[in-house]
Image (cartoon, rainbow, N blue to C red; front, side, top):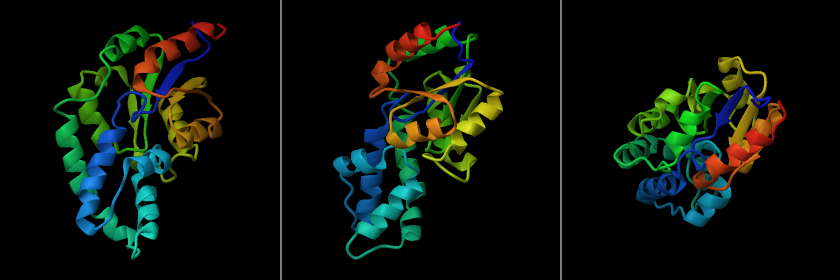
Length: 206
């Protein structure tokens, strides 16, 4: 067994290919107040950060500027739209369940995300994956979001883990894991997850 005692997974872009759906849902609700959100802007500026930080950016950059608190009031509508789309067909790679089953019992596992746990938990349940994770750390779990270390430190505390492997895709998430003092493995798409994590665990000294 490797020297890691747990694996802490980001959700969006790591366990599930949800970022395009998040962007599309936000774009739909923001359009009602005259703000255009493009995939290019979202991909470059918004992946891995808390929704509130994204809305602060959009509020300042809009012409005329908006009050970000007014934009945050759109979150319930965005969440309903997102959940309606995601719980009927969760975007998990077909190989993910088998991969997690192979890790079960060998490593403690958690989900650590800038999204709300109330969004993540129903998707994990719908995909038959909730059983593999001991805890979910979402945006509501901490006061300081990624890239601060708080989300990963809280997950490690909950698992009583001393040597976690963090699996991330975004710059903010990578910075968060490293700031917590943990080793970080970067992937670029959920389809890469089983191979890249398996390779890292197999090369880690016992």
